[in-house]
Length: 466
Ligand SMILES: Nc1nc2c(ncn2[C@@H]2O[C@H](COP(=O)(O)OP(=O)(O)OP(=O)(O)O)[C@@H](O)[C@H]2O)c(=O)[nH]1
Ligand SMILES: [Mg+2]
Image (tube, rainbow, N blue to C red; front, top):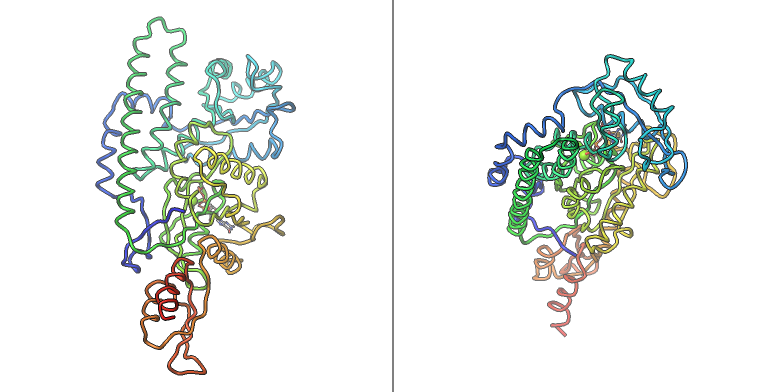
């Protein structure tokens, strides 16, 4: 299993281990090109709207058949759509509607009656300037159809999520990833606009510009990856167990790490995709063992794979952790759907990257227990903000970390002030030292030690003496 290495200056490092920094000048030069492309900017501001809209939200749902989603309800999904739009600070939700469909594969997106009803609702309200159709991606033909019918700008989830990510991406790494995710979207949109245009010249220039930009972004991400690897390698000598914290967006991952580490600088927010960087934070378990908690980007259902893929890189660090905390929001009416989505995505990520399955190292944490009367299922109830249940959780994390990293808590009798003591201070975590009651020349040391180090100790100090 891979380990993260951190600097020998333990205290400094443990204050706040953050491998991704917003102000790293060596990184920011890598992204200079992102801001120097007028043609791209005009395309992005047109399709990834930076304006404000008064939005009518439509949640289309399939009543039966293979497209029907079974572990949630249309009204829960509509609620998530509303939360997505509310995350865009300058947008307003004007009205919402749940619209039945027979299938997403039909030539016309809505049936005649539903379309008629929606058209009169939207066209009848002069305040409405946009409609958000709550599906992963709309086909170009459906986009054209709905624009013509409703007479307002049409958005799908891909677009809305992109806009949120754009708004929250500050660090070099997240800006690059978001920029990469924009390309397939824009490519589809310029193709859409090209329909019916006699000369394809303009389309070709734009297509080539997007292709060049994609190449530049990919090579910048590659460069950055090797810089980050170098940074990690430089922080040699001490290795810490790694506990990654994953979960659906807004479930409380950042809040939980803040509660477990006491790191005041962390800023949880009531927004979807508030965290877009993988960051590392030092914490201490009940036995004093130091661990690194990894904060990660949240998951969300119903987005296209090209968008998910851009964030897979950030999840790589999370996947190879010793223990994974899966945070679920107990107060969400859509708890089951969100939990299933995260587990399914993890499974496919593991499969596609040839990682070993992560299921046996997952601890499920039911967060926001202060908002519910009871907690069902096999999970540890906590409240990150009210600091409830954290002791039990930390003990569970410790047991899992010891098991996953082959560490043991051992009590040893060693000569006072001898080489053995010095060796153990250097190579193990010393939990307690007390004078041996039967022989004052010896000390009892309670330590946490890896199996490898314990075997070394035995070979240096026990077997060699025989
Ligand atoms: N009542 C209550 N609110 C909580 C609790 N934990 C987190 N929250 C709130 O939930 C919201 C989201 O918290 P975050 O910690 O930012 O969630 P996250 O999972 O990191 O979200 P993303 O980074 O956007 O995916 C914030 O408004 C928190 O204050 C809790 O235990 N109880
Ligand atoms: Mg967060």
